[in-house]
Image (cartoon, rainbow, N blue to C red; front, side, top):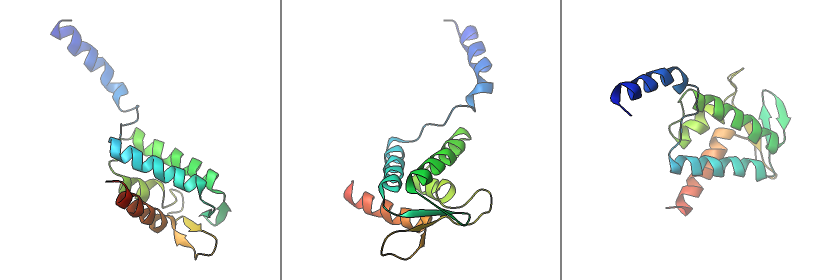
Length: 124
């Protein structure tokens, strides 16, 4: 294909480039997948804007927020995912809370960062 046609095709595709989710690095993708699985399979409960929810619902909500951030190319690390998608409410700005059996409530940010630290120690 000649350069002029290729250039024209690339320029025509530019308006659509921002609509696709930005790919994550393989390590970040694995870490986020682990954290989403960790959320869904915990026996904790999740507080969002004053209401308690099950962890499957928490995972679904956080996944939706992650996809919105990825559409804007805003996710560049697992820490960013935790801080922007999995911690504060976009509506109220309040921190999400997690309460696990036999443990005091904590912010979802602290809870997920502790799990990320544990996971990283296990996975070189």
